[in-house]
Structures are given as structure tokens and as C-alpha cells.
Amino acid sequence: MQFPMARRRSLRFHLGVSFVGVLVLTLLVVGSGLYFMVGRYLVRAGVQRLRYLAVVGLHRPDNDVGADPDAEVDARLEDLDRDASVLAARIGTRLVPVCIVSEDGTVLGASRSVRHGPALDMRRLRQARAAWRIQAARKSRWGRRVLGPGVFYFDIVRGRRWQVLILPVHRGPQLLAFLQLSQRWREQDELLATLRFYLIGAGILAIAFGLLASFTLARGIAAPLEHLAATARRVASGDLGARARLGPGDDEVSSVAEAFDHMVERVQASFQAQRRFVADASHELKTPLTAIAGTAEVLALGAADDAPEKRARALATIGREVDKMSALVGDLLLLSRAEQGDEAPIDVRPIDVHALVEEAAAYAQVAGRAHRFQLDNPPGLWTRGDASQLSRVLRNLLDNAFKYTPAGGSVELRSRAEDGQIVLEVADNGGGIDPTDLPYVFDRFYRADRSRSRRTGGSGLGLAIVRAIVERHGGRVAVQSSVGQGSCFCVFLPGVG
Image (cartoon, rainbow, N blue to C red; front, side):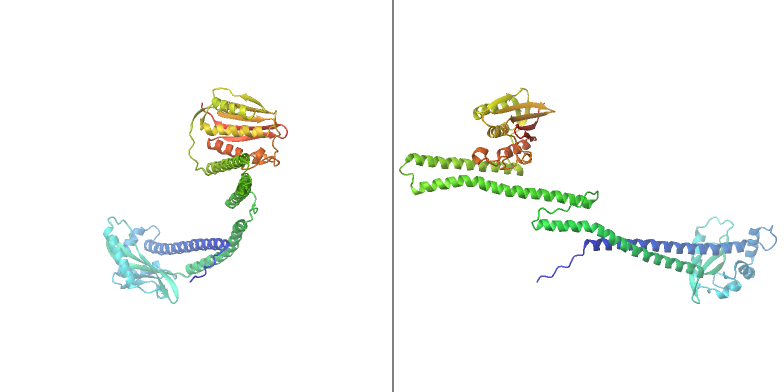
């Protein structure tokens, strides 16, 4: 049983949701961090304010301005049980209740406002006593301080939060009592509530704008990709003329579209070349096959039984056509292997270009008796490669020149060194090649002169073989031609110093 595949979300949806998700996460982290930092700052500021009130209350002198504050503190701590109420009243205010208790929790003194504040929490008092003992065990130098490290916490009184600080009062290592100070947390709670409101409101507005911006940006990113996907579907359906054509741009999408258009152009050119190759190969093989079939039919009907010379000519025709087909198939196999790169490695050796060209000139003097042949072949030129294959290159170029140059015309074979390269040229003064045909003269089965038959124009593989062999030797081949003035084929090969 096959289950239907879930419908995939569009790229716009994924981009938009991703952008909004990142925005929400960022706002959540930043907002929470800011809220936490402000709350922590308010707590620390509250603790410092309560401790400051305790320190100021303890050091405020009872008599004249010129009295010693530290002496006053020592005097008040001499009999803390008697002076606790006075000391609590001095430290506390209407908004800050103060209570002085002993180590066991007995109230020694309290300010008037203590009835409005939180009661003594014995659990917190035990925590403060434990913290004092740890601090006393580590302290070696006490100085003039009389307040040790405290414990703070929050308490709820009639629905209102209070911040409470418990401080140990001591003289050196001797613990005298605990000082509890409290302050209402209403202003701080209101400040945190206001901050929370603005953070949530700003976050909602930011998310709304982020949604609009993210989906707008996602649409801008996805639109060219959707167009590219639609073009790819058209190409897949057989429309090789479809192009994305997003226009010039420096972004990645434009680069992908440009590469896609270039790839489709290559594929289209390959398909066209393949169709042309199949058509031309079929045509080239059809002619000898037709001749063989016709001749074989004549022999089968016995039309040449009484004429031995006719039988001999028929058999010679069959043999000649078979040789042509074998040569054609061999050339096609050579080209196919060369283009696929799986042909056997070439026999690379140093080659005397002078001797190579002299051998080709000897062939030209036999094959081109009806033409005027000229040779320019200086000695001392060397290259590396397979001499037999490079010899075939020159013979193919010479055969091409003889075929397309009228009898009595001139064909010239030249060699020279140029910028570290060996240049071999075959020039003629024939009819030339039309400029529209120049880009295709090295393609398979291409004949610039459509009026030429296979007998006069060859199979159309000679120049394709030339290009394949030269490229395998690390060189290149080019052609220059003018209609009515002739053509010049140039082979560039790496030189050997």
C-alpha cells in the first residue's frame, strides 16, 4: 500500500518562517536578557541602599559635630541590649523598617515603622548566621567594620513585595546581633512591569514588520528561482530553446541562471550535432549500402553469368564500397574515442618537423599533380608527439586543399616557429569558405559546399579528425578564409627548444 507523499512547502514559506523564527528568537533572547539585567541591577541597588542606611545610621554621632564617629559606634555597641531601640530608630525611616535581633532571634529593638514591614524569618536568620560563621572562620584582619556580609530575600506583606536584608553586627570576631532592614518594592515592580510592557509591545511591532520584510525578501529570492525551475521544466519537456535570462547580476541566483542558460545552450548544440550526425551518417552509409545491394541483386539474378567481365566489375564495385564503409566506420570510431578520451595513448616522441613536412610534400606531389605545389620548410624545428598521426593531419589538410582548389591552382605547405610553438600551414587559392560556414568546418560530416557530392567532397570527417588529433597533442587548429581568394589552415603545436 502506497501512502501519498506530503506536499512540500514552498521556498518562500521556508525562508519567511526561518527569518521570522530567527527574529523571534533574537527578540526573546535580547528582551529576556535586558529584563533580567535590569531586575538584577534593581536588586543590587536595593541591597546597597539598605546597607548604606545601616552604615550611615551606625556612624552618625549623637553629640557635637566634632565627635569621632568610630568612637560613637563603639560606645553604642558596648551595651547593645540597652541601646538597640535607639539604634534601630536612628537607622530606620518611615519607609525602611529596622529591627535588631539577637543570635537566637530575640528582638532587641525596632523602629516604629517595623509593624508595617515583614516579620522576622527564622529560616533566613539561620542562613545569615551560617554565612557569618563561614566569614568569621576566614577573616584574619577585621579593621573597623562592624557589619558583615548579609542575606537578602523578598517577602510578601498584604499583597506587596518587600526586599529584606539581614546583616550581622559584630566587633571583630565577636557576633553581637543581627540587623534586619526592609523596603517596599513597589516602585521597582512598577518599573519592571513598565519595561515588560514596552518590551512585549516593541517585540510585537518588530515581529509584524519582520513578517512583512521577511516574506517580501523571500519573494524576491524565490521569484527568480521559481522562474528558473519553470524554465528547467520546459527544457525537460523538450523545449531546448527555453532560457532563464535573468539578466546580469552579481548574486548567486544570477550566476546559477547564467550557468543554466550556458548548459542548455551546450545541450541544445549537442542534440543538434547528434541529430546532424545521425542524419549524415545514415546518408553516408546509405550510398554504399545501396550500391552493394543493387550489385548483389544483379549477381543474384544471374545477369552477369554469361559475362565474366561484368561479374568482375560487380565484385570490384562491392569491394570498393565495402572499403569506403570500412574507412568511414574507422574514422567514426577514431573520432568517438578521441572525443571521449578513451583512445589508446599516443606514442609521444621527439619529431623532426622538417622530415615530417618533407614526407607530406612527397605525398602532395603525387596526389596533387593537377595543382602547383609550393613548399617552405626550414630545418631545425622540433615538436613532440606521434609522427604517424601528425602525418595524417597534414595529408588530410592537403587532400582538402586539392579537392577545393580547381586544377592549375596553387597549394602551399609551410612550417615555421612562432612564440615557442610550431606552426604548420596549408594554404590554397581556391574558392574559399563563406564566413557563415567557418565555425562549422571542423564538425563531422560538414561540407561548406552543399553542391559537392560524396565523391568530390569526401565524407566530411577529414577536418574533424584533424582537430581531434591536434587537440590530443596539446595544440589547436584554426582557419582563415576569404570567398574567392582561398583558405589557410594553421596547426599550432608545442615546440621543443
